[in-house]
Structures are given as structure tokens and as C-alpha cells.
Amino acid sequence: MTKHSKVQQQVLSLYKQFLQVTKNQPSFHEYVKDEFRRNAALAKTDVIKIEYLLRRGWRQLDMLKTSSVSSAGVFEKQAGKEEQLEPEPSSRAGTVS
Image (cartoon, rainbow, N blue to C red; front, side, top):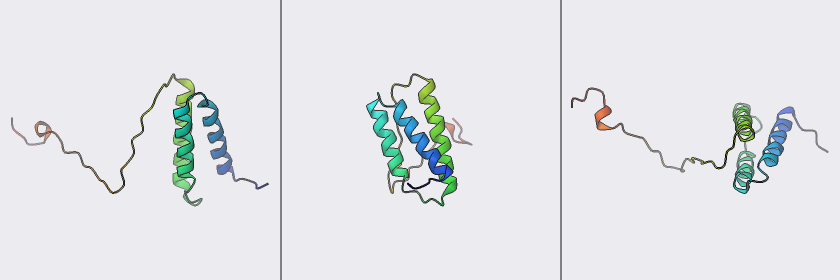
């Protein structure tokens, strides 16, 4: 059996805990599996991104464990589509009404 690095063990532990917490919530359960699959392609050398995702994952897991979350929304960036928000005309600096 292959010995996993410390970071790999942390990722596997987080994944198992997420699956346990979401086992009775099918939509969360599928979201967790999809997120871990999507990020499995990260390069092992991208330590900063991996550590960021681990910290974010632990915070999300704590939130699921400690609150009565019944649903959640996900914002996804559309490929090739950059959107910039323009301020409302009344909130622009130097505008006189």
C-alpha cells in the first residue's frame, strides 16, 4: 500500500468527514464529491492552492457541523466571460444631482 504524504492524509481525512456529515443531504454529498474530483487534478507542487483549499474546506465543514444549513448556493465563473460591474450613476464620484 502506498504511503500518503501528510497533506494527502489531511485531504483524505477532510473528504471522509465531508462525506460523513453530508450522507443524509444528497445535494451536498454530490457537491462535495464533485469539488474534490475537480481539484484532484491540481499539481502536487501547487502547495499554496492546496493549503488554501484545505483551510477553506475545514471552515466549510465546521459550518456544516455547527449550524442548521439546509441549502447552499454556488457561484461559478463562466469560462471566457469577464463581467465588470459599473457603479450606479448616483454613486459616481463628482456627480452632481
